[in-house]
Amino acid sequence: MASNEEILAGLAEIVNEETGLAPESVELDKSFTDDLDIDSISMMTIVVNAEEKFGVRIPDEEVKNLKTVGDAVDFIASAQS
Amino acid sequence: MARKVVITGLGATTPIGGDVPTMWENALKGVSGARTIEADWVAEYELPVTFAAQISTPASEVLTRVEAKRMDPSTQFAVIAAREAWRDSGIEEVDHDRFAVAFATGIGGVWTLLDAWDTLRAKGPRRVLPMTVPMLMPNGPAAAVSLDLGARAGAHTPVSACASGTEALHQGLELIRSGKADVVMCGGAEAAIHPMPIAAFASMQALSRRNDDPEHASRPYDVDRDGFVMGEGAGALLIEAEEHALARGARIYGELAGTSVTADAYHITAPDPGGLGATRALKAAMFDARVQPSDVVHVNAHATSTPVGDQPEYVALKTALGDQVDSVAVSATKSQTGHLLGASGAVEAVMTVLAVHDRRAPVTINLENQDPQIPLDVVTSARDLPSGDIVALSNSFGFGGHNAVIVVKNV
Image (cartoon, rainbow over all chains, first blue to last red; front, top):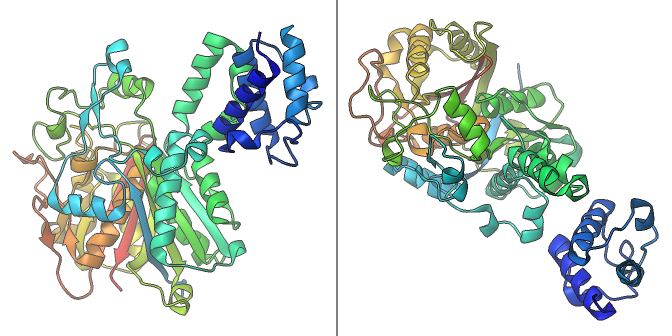
């Protein structure tokens, strides 16, 4: 079971891999679209990679609710428990 | 009077050079880009052919990691070559609505397609990445070049197997002549050195089996030729309406004076033994360019090094050029680069333009015993072309009976 800090670090790594954004710019209050400029195709790639990394399932209908990095961390944390 | 079209920018990434200056230096020297493939899959699948001509500068050394991730290798090569041609042209401002792309491929994103299929089978549909479709589509290279350079007058993708790259120049010329564009980025890209296409081409007996001596495997016109060598890469040519190039004071390499495309309607893969479709293409291209056979001093031949392909091209050249065929310096540059399939016509167009501009014909390597049935004057060490007005042709032929020819004149 990953802690929230570990989930954030893992997500930052995935976002960096997909977009080239510096991992430290991936902070809890950042919006994927408005702050990080991540388009829907990149978002789906990030979701699929996060599913594999954290061993969770993020349903497609849930993805639109993951507006900020914090939303994604919370969802993954609760899906793990 | 049709608008005159000139070539002002060149780009390439090939097995004998990752940019145009390196490629051209090697092409005049005569080197082989063919090597044993250093990949586990050669042994894993027990491929009957274990070598190919892979690009000499990996795309990962040119593109950023994130750029490369979103592009199939064929598109990576296209973008690398097109950026070089764009820089080389010195063009600073362009009316983006009058700027088009005609960028060909023979096969398209075959690595992406097959990787996605492997992922689906191993990990299920959820793991098939959302970028799969835009990466595998054959218009991917043209679309990426259009996006990268802001070309909005259409992004076209001629697909005619190994004639594709040459057909892209045909399409570009038509776009400018018809007034639909003033500037066109033309080219071709291919990245098919993957076990499946190798197995498929080997299965049709098209590939050389000289596994113990890759550098001598591509040997057009030699009696011991036994098939072509798979190549990969891209070539790009920025072409412009002459008045557009003159207005911006551009350096002009040469004139794209004419083009033609014909179809054999004879057999799906075998060339017409009488070379009729190729002859019609040669004659039509010279007519289109308003040049005579006696004007032609150089031909960059299709010459893939297959036993059945090289000879009909000679028949076509002899028929179309008549006695002039004996006075033409013929270069078979696939002897060096291997066969870049849908990119070959574009890379050979770059070489043809440079041959006219520099008045130097590139080298055909590995010609030890010339096939007596192909008595062409083959360039085996770099040779000067005559002074004065000169014309060169570049031929490409593709499975499906596609024939495409371009005519390049000095300016």
